[in-house]
Structures are given as C-alpha cells and as structure tokens.
Length: 211
Ligand SMILES: CSCCC(=O)C(=O)COP(=O)(O)O
Ligand SMILES: [Zn+2]
Figure 1: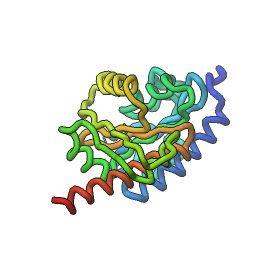
Figure 2: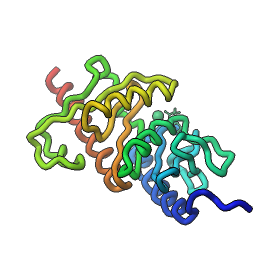
Figure 3: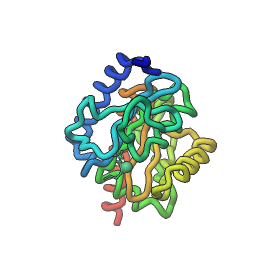
C-alpha cells in the first residue's frame, strides 16, 4: 500500500479536536440543519476538514477527511465541505493560521442580513475586542466585513482575498449565511468566533433598544 502524503497520527489528533469543538458549538445551536464546517491545518500542504453534509451535532472522527491546499480530497472518496476553498485560502495565505471555523448561528445570520447594505459591522469600544489576537485595548474599532452570498466559491474566495489585502481581519460574515473566523490554533479560532458572536449580539440588542 502507498504511504499517505500526510501524518495519520496528526490527522487523528486534529480530528479529535475538531469533533470535540464541533459538538460543543452544535450544542450552542450554532450549526443548524447540517450547516457549518470546521478545519485544522495538518502541515504545509494538507488540512483536515469536515466531510460535506454531515450532522455537526453528531460528528465523529470518521467525518473528518484530508484536503490539499487547492481543496481537493486526498486519499479518500469522501466529498469535502462545499466551502473548503474558504478554509484552504487562509491556510495558503497565512502559514501561521492553524484552524478555521464556520458557523451559522441565529445571531450571525440576523446580523449578516441587517448589515449587508452597509457592508460591515462596526465594533468599537468593547473590552472583548482584546480577544482578537494582537489587540491590547478596547480603544479601537474593528469593521467585520459582510460579503454577498454566492454558491461560486472561487468568486467568494476572490472577494475575501481582496479584503485580506486591505485590512487586518479575524473573521467575516456572509449575507444570510454565517460567520468565518480563524486563528493560529483551535483555542484562538474559538476565542475569535465566540468574541464575534458576543459582540454581534450586543450590536443587535443595541439596535433593538435604540429603535
Ligand atoms: C445546509 S447548510 C448549507 C451549506 C453550508 O452553508 C454549510 O456551511 C455546510 O456545508 P458543508 O458542505 O460543509 O456541509
Ligand atoms: Zn455555510
């Protein structure tokens, strides 16, 4: 049998991490109806990612597969997440990115619709902005981009690349769809995802209270 082009022990470890995190995020109601996808870097050329269409609340290690940085399945017949390119573009572009998380929470989806016309959600003055890697103070602002939704992943990845060229980013929203967040490892990506969820929820509450 041919040897695998990635380390299977690394895959087993990353798959366990993805499964544990996915189940927790699913329990929060952030992955309805099989939505959402999750990945971790294995090495410079490979990432572990969720198989397309799996129930994220019942995810098992066998629901994690390997793709190369072009998003193609490696040594498996499984079909990778429909949004694989949005993960691999971050691994290709940033060698220090080790984890990409995508969820469809109610808050993320409502915020994406409400702020789509504006093109971003402006977050300013929150202590929790310090949860975003590199930020030392609440006295700053982050504009979370809201991209149009499309089933054309090449097009969507192109828009993301354009934004990444322009500004520091820890995540982005897709209109009527959900949130992408990333980090150097699972802990950092989770921290970013949870910070955005909390801050978006605050912004939605403020909109309601000020109406
Ligand atoms: C039913 S969810 C629609 C697809 C999607 O947005 C998603 O996050 C899950 O797609 P995948 O192919 O990764 O299961
Ligand atoms: Zn999605």
